[in-house]
Figure 1 (spheres, protein in one colour):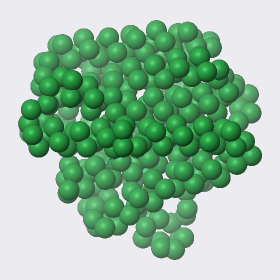
Figure 2 (figure 1 turned 30 degrees about the horizontal axis):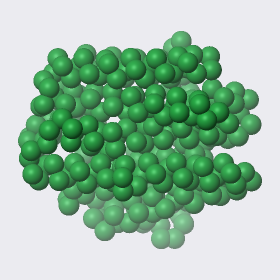
Figure 3 (figure 1 turned 120 degrees about the vertical axis):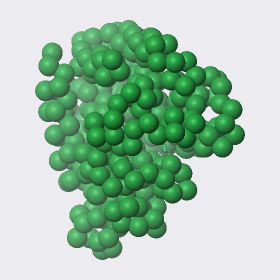
Amino acid sequence: MDVTAELKRRSGRIESAIDRLLPAKTVRPERLHEAMRYSLQAGGKRLRPVLVVASAELFDPQGRTDPLPAAVAVECIHTYSLIHDDLPCMDNDDLRRGRPTAHKAFDEATALLAGDALLTEAFALLSRAYAGNPALAQALVHELAQAAGSQRLIGGQMADLLAERQGNAGTGDLEFIHLNKTAAMIEASLVMGGLCGGASPEAIERLRSAGRNLGMAFQVIDDILDATADSASLGKTAGKDAKAGKATFVSLHGLEASRAHARDYTDRSVAELARLPGGALFLAGLAEAMAARSH
Ligand code: GRG
């Protein structure tokens, strides 16, 4: 299978769904909607929404339930977290998705509000798009709220900030941070796709485990790339972690052991995916393509 071509096909559908489902920038207040679209339409890799759509297709190849609103909701949350993470009170970054961060392109207050609005829009979108199937709407809202909440995405970010301030993070802390700051949203993406597709409870648990391991692999690879790649190819500031004296997989375990960890998490994820309908070939291919980036 040509994973790159498949990825392109799916991300094209996601770009048009984002354009269709988000308020237009001509809607008042124009500056806020422009800022939301500026960050959302800046050309991220769209990994999470692609996972939602690909996971739904495994169980509902005819597309009886449209997974695109769920995919866009996940991308709204992810983008809000990036906007807030880049703010001066957090990572204070100038570059994101290859262009100036939201607070640089607009101003701090507008960036904060654009993030808030994307967070809220995600849940409005789910409740609106799946109103005809209240059980599905409830399950999707629950899954996304859990993944984005104080014990997962936001909790992981808090733990990350505390670890940076205290400068004494160990491997257990790092695992907590990665599992929640990064893996939670990747896990939720596969699960939400499964929910849209009508997957059984057993399949949902398999998706959850595959997503958790894929998310951990993703973060270890992100740590490796931060230490080895340049800003131009990453589209964000490279070498930041080392400069900030941050604990990462690379700083705690070294480059070679980190590559072995990335391989291990990828293998676990692929093993779970192989037990899903059709062997989840595209998702497994995507996991392998991600792993290949760390070499
Ligand atoms: C502010 C609540 C809150 C959370 C912030 C996402 C995040 C949590 C911080 C960003 C910094 C970071 C290293 C997060 C780990 C996850 C990660 C690598 C995000 C970047 O995801 P990509 O590479 O980005 O998929 P694109 O731009 O391609 O969507």
